[in-house]
Image (cartoon, rainbow, N blue to C red; front, side):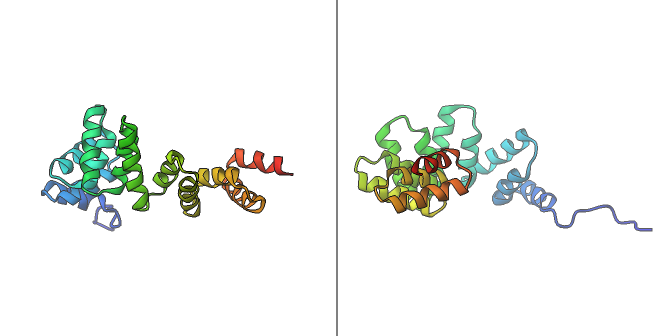
Amino acid sequence: MNDTPDVDYYSRKPWLRQAAESGNVAAKYHYALECDDPDERRRWLREAAREGYIPAVCDYGLECDDPDERRRCLREAAHEGHVPAMYQYALACEDPRLRKRWLKQAAENGYVAAMHDFGRECEDPKDTQRWLREAAEEGHVQAMYELGLQSGDPDEKRRWLEQAARYGLDPARKALGCLG
């Protein structure tokens, strides 16, 4: 008879909790990500964020119900160079110039959704095309579709629309049907 308790030796959760309770800030963050209970998750994110762990500052900000606290956390993490926070902070900005600045910064740092969103906000059609193309080449389906619609080259138009349609985007399928 086996006297050992059933332990999932492959689960990180018990080990992370132990390290988190011992004060390891990275463990607090990673344990939070493993929590199923939203209150417990928020508690550990808040603790790691208060200790200045930047990914936790961003994620805690995203879970805040208070919009001011949310913006504060996202701004703090964005200013520390956390690229996902740059994007999320841009989305939370009410000032269009500030929004565009943070979208551009996140896009320049390789954040694909920011490439798409920044491209849509560019006044210069060449800049729009550049950023939509970069997002599309990185797999952003909506950017593929928009790039296809905007293309003056029939072959390129078809190629991007077909690619977006392969990913299941119904408007791309309909646009392809209109091409004949």
